Image (cartoon, rainbow, N blue to C red):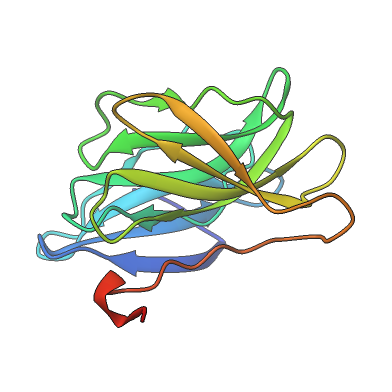
Length: 151
């Protein structure tokens, strides 16, 4: 039986699962997935102060930020808990991931000591591109749902 004192964030996928941040008293937050039909809960993240999870457009992957040895990183994992890994990055602080509508890229806030620019990572190729300029703090990336909406 899972004893959760606090559930901070909930996101559902099309397979009938909810992703949430769970936190027991005195423990770091962790990402869990709840099967809506059965109520079964499984830990998904490293559990090292995990941040808000976001589903990939196809509902197969979760992305969220969490603490690791060299700072704060973006972690991606399949909904069943397999294939979990940190996305390598050029900055020690990385958070607030957002999947592109096609699921091929992740945008996230990044920086040296604070989050002040947006990085876009192509998942398959493993390439990072920094979007933005010094002096303007950029955070909380949100993709346009349909690229055809841009003139």
